[in-house]
Amino acid sequence: MLFKRIGIDLGTANVLVYERGKGVVVNEPSVVALAVRKNTIVHVGNDARSMLGRTPDGISIIRPMREGVIADYTITEAMLRHFIQKVCGRWRLSAPEVVICIPAGATSVEKRAVRDAAESAGARKPAHLIPEPLAAALGANIPVGSPRGNMVVDIGGGRCEAAVISMFGLVVSHSVRVAGDRLDDTIAAYIRRRHNLSIGDRMAEEVKLEVGAAMPLDQELRCQVRGRDLVTGLPKTITVTSTEISQAIADPLTQILATVRNVLERTPPELASDIIDQGIVLTGGGALLRRLDELIAQETGVPCYPAPDPLRCVAVGAGIALDYLEDIKRNLPADDETLVGAY
Ligand code: ADP
Ligand code: MG
Image (cartoon, rainbow, N blue to C red; front, side, top):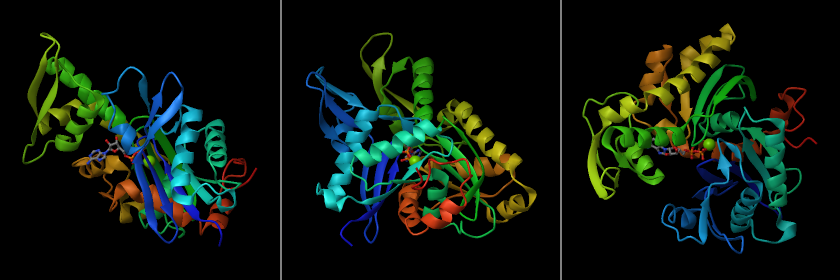
């Protein structure tokens, strides 16, 4: 075949490209550095992210995706073009066949924007759109083609999506615009309030990665936090513990739990009993938060565990979906003309 077949996970935090036959070939943050005066892109992905919070006036760092959907269309398209060309080259004839994921809770306008961006960024027409929870489940190796109920909860940067899937279709789903970014913001607000220290987004995320936990840990962790003292205005370092962070993020976690519970409550009884047997699978970066699986299991009474390699599930699943497009199309709701290739 002259062209490649790829799956794209266009996430709020990270963009991943999965190439059939090769695996994940791009895995970079969804960040773009823009030269403000000339309005040109200077860096995309890793290079742009390393500049976050440390740029001179003339450069602005943009995250074009917000809460799982496109916030800045032009920049998203340019970012996609950069990654697609990196994998497939610039040659028009080699335009790849693309499966790209959209949040199950996105509006039809938001879905269309993703398709348009992918196609103008170099995808072969039509670009296929599939719901993110379905891709997450495929990538987590869950037998989604079977008539059994399977439940996934994907927690990314901007959005948490919970869904029950059976026979390649979403039976019940619900999403909330609360996920990793909100945890970071909540941590920064807490440290500001409790310790009078102002910290940047990256520092807040680092604290979450180093000591973040959904419930207090048996072995308490500590980490150093650097920021600017709000009283003196000078740089300062303090220490925070996993116990205080777990308390600080209780509120956004409650919203995530409510989303999971909402889906369980609306799941038909037969499928619910399958889910009790097989458990809830967590995907996305948020699945790595310490003890989150235990918190969900405790609060819902349903076993829960993180997928192996949760950050890659959606991209791998999008790649796998290339082989199941017909099955997926068959199970879409009749009124959904925006998905999988249909115009
Ligand atoms: P998206 O699909 O929105 O791009 P990802 O699934 O790539 O998001 O996940 C990114 C989010 O996961 C970020 O908010 C990041 O801080 C968070 N994350 C990554 N690793 C961990 C970890 N070990 N513990 C908690 N959160 C994590
Ligand atoms: Mg994601």
